[in-house]
Structures are given as C-alpha cells and as structure tokens.
Length: 296
Image (tube, rainbow, N blue to C red; front, side, top):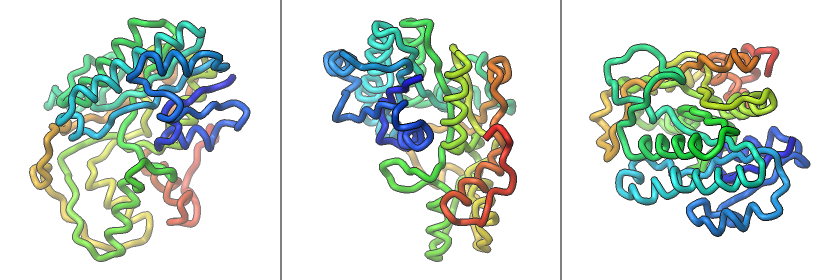
C-alpha cells in the first residue's frame, strides 16, 4: 500500500516518514500543494500514484484561528474538501486528521467523548475542523476521520518543542513553572498515533475513529508525571486557565475514548503514562520504556 502524506513537514507527517518504508510514502509539503487552492490540489494529484492520501494540512494555531477565521476555514474545511474531491477522483482513500476540540461545548460532562457523541466546539479552530469533517463525509464514502489530542513526540512541530520537553527545559533552567489544572484531555504519543492509523488503514477502516493514548489527565498532571519520570524534583504550581488569558476558549474536558477501534480489530493504545515514559526513553531522558505492548 502506498501513502501520500500532505503536510509531511509537520509533527505527525514527519512521524509517518519515520515509520513507513521509503518506497511506500510520497512526502508532500506546502511547496508541492496548497490545499486552499483548488488548481494546486488538482495539479498535484495529476499522475500521483498512491492508494491513501493522509491529509495533515492544518491551521492549528488556536488563537490565530480566532484572529483569522477565514484562514482557519480555508485550510481546515475548504482545503479538506479540495483534497477529498481529488482523492475520490483518483480512487484513493482519504484520511483526515481532526481534533478533540470539536468537543467541549457541554462543559459539564465527566465521561470521555466517543465517536457517536454529538460535536460542540468552543472556538473557531474546533468549528473549522467540524466543517472539514462534514465536507469529507459528504464527498466520499472511502474516508477515515481520525480525531486525536494533545500530541507529543520525538519529532516536534515548527515551534520546536513539545509540552513535556518544555517542562523539562524550564525545570532545568530553574524557571518558575505554573501549569493549568482545569483542562482535562488525552495526551497522545505521535508514534502510537501513526502506528495505529496505519493499522486502521490496512484493516480497511472507514468512518470516524478516536485515536488517543488510554486515559486522561490535566496539563498539570502531565507536567508532574514528566518530571517524576525524568527523576527531576522541581515545584510546579497548579493554576486556573484564567492565569493565561487567551483569545480562544478551550474545553475544560475533552478526553476521548474509542468505541470503534475494537470493531476494526485494532488494539487500544497503551496508557498515556506508559506512552510518556516511552517518549522520554526515545529522546534519551530515561533509560528504557517501562512497558511496551506487544502490538507496538
């Protein structure tokens, strides 16, 4: 099976490049394709020999989306439509990556969101991803929408760091650490995400699937666990979100679980604590992963 990865320079795109055999992946960046430009997408797909299109192109600056909603919908919604139209024309499956931020409007829930739960975004970014999901579903049946959350991995995004690595750096620099303790989410290791998505595609999965590491925590809990795993004794102050004013509202609870993985014969991901330890081992912060499931 041959994959084309749109957005291959990003965090998850680079992870696909690490995991997939070179002969099985076509790497596409903004230089090759502008998803907001229908002609650019059409031209890129001309002669493109692949079975699966991984659409990782996204405008995911959450505050930036509030400032420029037009760009958010152009990239995350219209862009998804352009890609899916051409994937269908070329007989390819399309995999569209979405977010836990499609949820959050129900601020009183204490149960993990599953695929059948109604969406309810709180911000422009989440709304633009909901729109992208709808356009993908409406365009082709041969689609897989992957919702994921709070990513960390050895390969970083353009900002050059992940949340755990930032916590380690600031602790070692003796900088004050204040971390929000009222936003509950599902941390996800990009290596586990990518391997699971490949497994889903090979199983012929379609529809919408949540792919996150098992369990959930607040950002404060994730920070504390990071320092403990790395053997660093350093104080972290838990604070309310109001301590960090933001243009975009963020869900107080966006933990996700899956009711679909099992139906496709795909095992649940390991716990976020085990995944965090494996990540820290991968970047040389701990000696070895504490527990790695046989499926990985």
